Length: 374
Image (cartoon, rainbow, N blue to C red; front, side, top):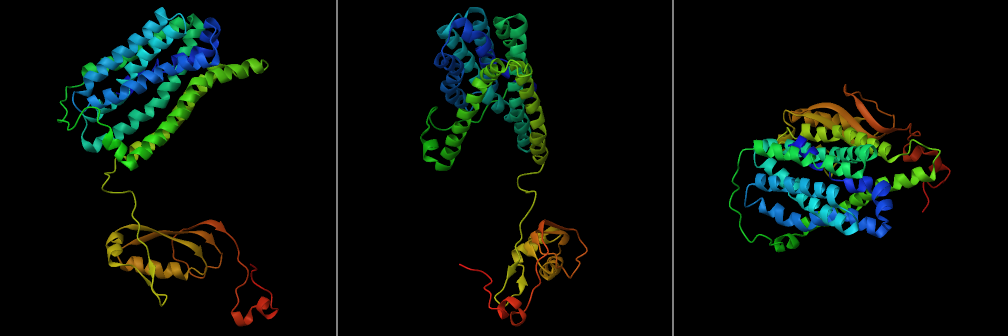
């Protein structure tokens, strides 16, 4: 499915990739018209995805994925063959966007419907992480083909990409989704869910920024290259290569999430057990947290380490509860520790504090110097 998604994404940014160098000068587009052309694909996607994504609760997402991949390839092919200006180009690009609406989210649903619950988090992590790499690949392939054989060839070549996902779909077993409740396009429960709407609006703002960057990235670097003709390295193709490389460098981050997904959600990677201080200054661990600590390796953390006696008392409580202290850590170490717990100590900052005095012996107090002034 990840390989199939790379194919689906191959024509994803072909229009922005060749817009500045080919379409704007050939079709004499203004900036507003160029934005309309580039945004037509996103418009087709936006208007269609609520319907197609909702349909995956009622029919096998594999069927929608097959249709979406076909339409995506068709729209891209039609653009390369017949687009002659702003409106024909926007029309064909919108068709490609509609096709992608039937490919991306339905593809994710088709994937998760065929996996056990324990495997879903890992699969989703890898599937979504391949998106950025696919976009970078689309930038690169589109520009290389356009430079070599013309911009129409870029559409004809990238139109082959969704056929990869189409081939993958034919290998998926059919799945019948559970019966869905409610009307098809009933968004009222979503609008009533304030927590969900927070994520919706935040993701909308993110996409506004993201698609602005993707649409005008190549045009911007084309402008930079023309402005600084003495810097031949600043070419749109080089930027596309860097975009792809950066996407590859991000893969380890997503792989970390993939590896962490091997842990069941009911078993978090760490637990928290606070140590409380009674009114008389005695440190205690509540009975509930004693059960949390039993048999666990414990990192003991405080804000400041002075003499280390607090760490020593806390370590004794943890060991009495059945835990094993493997290290101590603090924000600030005053470098005055008089005890050694026999485990590593990690400090964010180390600073040798001035000498401490009893009130009766403090030289500043004897000289009547204020310790602080407000």
